[in-house]
Amino acid sequence: MVAQRSAAALLLCLALPAVVLCARPHLSLDGASRDGQISGARPNAEVNLRPIIGIVSQPGSPAPDGHSYIAASYVKWLESAGARVVPIFYDMTPAQIQERFTIINGLLLPGGGAILAPGHKFYDTVRQLVDLAVEANDNGDYFPVHGTCLGMEALSVVLSGNYTILSPFDAEDAAAPLLYTEEAAGSHLLKSLPPDVVTDLQNKAIAMENHMMGLSMTAFKENPQLSKFMKVISLSLDKAGAAYISTLEGRKYPFTAVQWHPEKNPFEWTPALHIPHGTDAIRMSQEIANYFVAEARRNLHKAQSANDEDNMLIYNWKPEFTGKRSYEGEEKDFEQAYFFENAGHGRR
Ligand SMILES: *[C@@H]1O[C@H](CO)[C@@H](O)[C@H](O)[C@H]1NC(C)=O
Image (cartoon, rainbow, N blue to C red; front, top):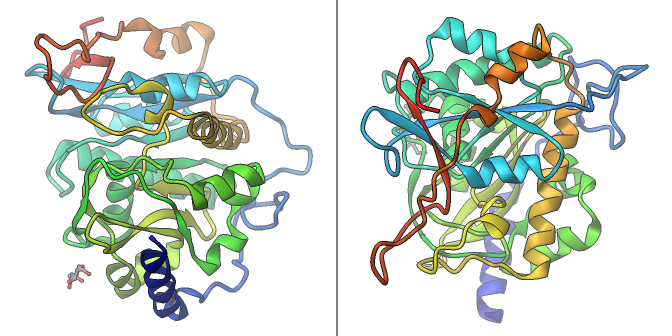
């Protein structure tokens, strides 16, 4: 373990020079936040105490044919921090996506297995939403985006414009500590978290990693669009000791992306994975949710009416107990999931 740590430290030193290029960013957003990094606070900032966060659904297991799904863990995670959720169906038309964007106060791109290339509807939908979020922030409309696992990978592909920027890593069921980079010192996310949570993430393997693909520091550095947009806050090591980027944060935009799964600690229970469920891990999960929902309270998008809002909320659907095993040892990804019928979206 000690040897591994120092190997990682060495790797960080080698990796760092190219990453430390961050002069204080010039912001096109108005105002300055408490840490002066990410702006958008308005002089008489109104706080939105009824934040709504959009989560993009995706096709594939455990959704039945002709349906997409959202794992309920993401929904519960956001709800427990004081937000409500509106699903954004991956197969919506661009006009429908545009309309949804005007009522959500933040966007969560979840984990999963969707294909990240143009022409695949999930990717095209994510791409449109990210473009809308960038444009909103450029116009002084503070709009946070958070990507988890595949969500981080999708952000990396969209922002880099390189569909082969990801590479394989051996990090399935591999909870890991975060190895902070020098950029971590100026991180809006880390400054917003309680200090003990920041050190727990560094010293204990409570960040649940469960991925086969990832973003290497080399690929990050080689892509100027991505490295101009994002800064690397942490790396983690896979089972073979290879370093991948585990946390990214926008230099100028309120975007965060984590390769790990903060929503799994309190809400996913499959015995097939070693998800950290200790008090420290649960507290960490809650504080990451608090962070993201606090960001969403800074956005003032709103539905036209309370009825319109009701009709879009995820409360119109019922989650199913997808984690129930039909025989001893059966592996299930999610305890509960919401299913949405494609186009129509009628199944409730
Ligand atoms: C995309 O990223 C990969 C990994 O860094 C690199 O090998 C490849 O050359 C990049 N492709 C383009 C078109 O830049």
